[in-house]
Structures are given as C-alpha cells and as structure tokens.
Image (cartoon, rainbow, N blue to C red):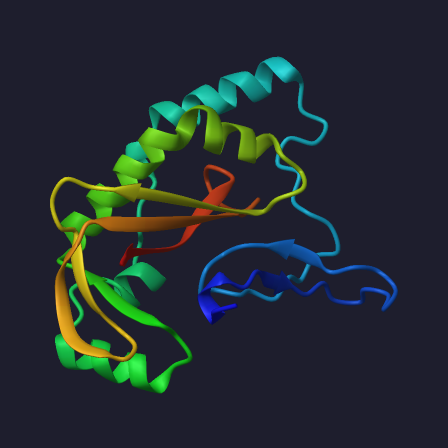
Length: 183
C-alpha cells in the first residue's frame, strides 16, 4: 500500500493499551488527539436551536476563511523552488500550491457550499468524527505542484481538497485545518 493510501491513526492520550485507536483519514496531515472523546458541538442544546444554528452556518459560509493558517503558509503562492525543496525535505508525495490567495479562498468557499447539505451538516452533528475531507474538481486549474519522482512542474491542477476540523472554540464550531490542490 502506498504511503498516501494508508489511513492515519489519531492517537488518543491516556488510552488504555487494550483499546483500539481512533481512525480517520486525513491525507498528509496526521494530528495527535488531545481529548479522550470526540467533540459534540451540540450537547445539551435543544433541537430547534441546533437547526437554527446549522442554517445560520450555511448562510454565513462566505465568512469562514483561511486567516493566515497552514493553507496560506504552505499551499498558496509558493515559489517553485520552495515546492521542490519541501518535496525533498518532507515525507510527502506531492507538494502543491494554489495560484494565489483569491483562488485558495474561492476553492474553500466553493467546496463548502457544494458539500454543506448534507455532508458538512451531518458531520457537524456526528459525534464520531472530528475531521472531514472535501474533494472537488474545478473547470480551470487552481494550482501547480510537483509529484515525487517526476521533476516536471504540473501547472494544470484542477482538483483540490479542504480538510475541516471540529473546534468548539471556533466561531462556527469548526475551522479549516488545510486546503491544497491535488493531482
């Protein structure tokens, strides 16, 4: 099995050895879990309030942004030499970048609107998964990148992935963990 096809194990601290680990697929971005339980964003909240909140999130998807995080640092307007260096220095198969911040933001908004009903909405209510990956194909290239073993820059990447992470401290109950163009 190739490295990128392998599921990532989220380690749970203070977990008894006999318990099985929590599994979730989040390509290239394993995160060490600090909580013992999954986040339940709507615990003890009346059903009517939950529906109102979910509808409000949907109406305000344009407000959920990248805010200087991982996507902007590692996957937006990155120079070609920096992508090559990252590919050689890190244990990754691809090093990709969006053309610029506007393209990255448009990809995030497009995928979140495309998948809000029902995928993101159901995920927000799901107490068994804290991470969700959204994949999409776009009519025009959204970025460029290198694939390990191929020394040619691909400037025609039309696929992208947005990874969301539940975060009870975030305004909308989740944040963008990363977003990147895909081969």
